[in-house]
Length: 355
Image 1 (cartoon, rainbow, N blue to C red):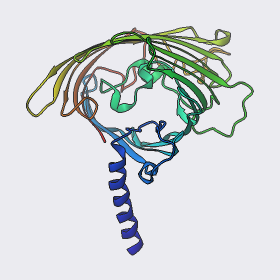
Image 2 (image 1 turned 90 degrees about the vertical axis):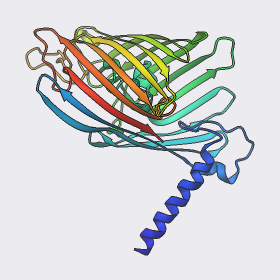
Image 3 (image 1 turned 120 degrees about the horizontal axis):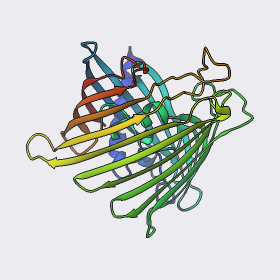
C-alpha cells in the first residue's frame, strides 16, 4: 500500500513538472529543440490526450448507443536536442486497446527529419488527421475505410516552411503487415510518398501515393487534395484512386469534400461552426478477403455508397480543445448494396476534449 501511494505521488509530481515543461515547445509529435544542450526540465516528457465520447441514434433500426470512440494518451520528449520520441496508446478505440505510435525521431541537419518505428503512413489529408483534429463526429470514407494505414517502418521528411512557397516532402518504407505482425519477413516492402505545398495565402495542395501488399495482391493508391482556409472559413476537397493487381478487383474511387463556417461567440461558447460534407466511395476491397464464388478475386468489404452530412459544432475554447458536435448523416446505397449497421442514416452527438 505504501509503495502504491509513493508511486501515485511520484506520478502526480511528474505530471506537475511535465505541465511546466510543456509550454515552451508544444512537442506533440517529437521535434527538435534549438539548444546545444538540454536543461533538466527539457528531459521531462510531455503528456497529451484525447477523449471522444458520442451518442448515436440509428433511424433505420430505431436503436441507439453510447460509445467511447477514443481515449488516447501520448508521451513525447527529447533525449538530445536532435533526438525525440513519441509513444501513443488508445485505451478505447471502439472498446479495444491499441498501441498506435512508437517511434524515435532524428534531426541530423536543418529541415531534415528521420523517423523510425510504428507510425501513421504519410498518405492523404483526412486520414492523417488525429482524432482531436477531425471536424466531424465520424471520419470520411477516405479517412476510415480506404486510406487509414498505420505500419512499422522508416520515413524521411524535408520541410521548408520558411521558403517563398512553403512545402513538405515525405517518403517512407514499411513492412506492410500492420502493427501486430512485425516478425514476418518481406520480399517486397511497401512505400508511401507525400508532398504538401502552400502555394498561396490560405491554400494547400497535397499529393500522395502509396503501394501496399496486404496479402497476395499488390494495391496502388493515388490521392490528390486541396483546401483553403481563413480565420472563419475552411473548404476542402480530396480524391483517392485505388487499383488492384492481376485484375483481382475493379478500380476504386473515393471523394471527400466539405465546408465549414465559424461564427465567434462571446458567452460560454468560444465559437459556433456550421459544417456540410459530401463523401462517396465505389465498391471497395481491403485487399485481403477473397471471393467465395470467383477464384483469384477479392471480395467486396465495403459496398458503394454516398453520404451527406450536416452539423453544428460548439467550441468551448479554441478549436480542437473542447468541442460539442451535432451531426446528421444520410446514406445512399445501390439496390445491390448491403449496408453495415454502423453505416446507415443516424444522428450523432459527440463531445471531444484534448489535454
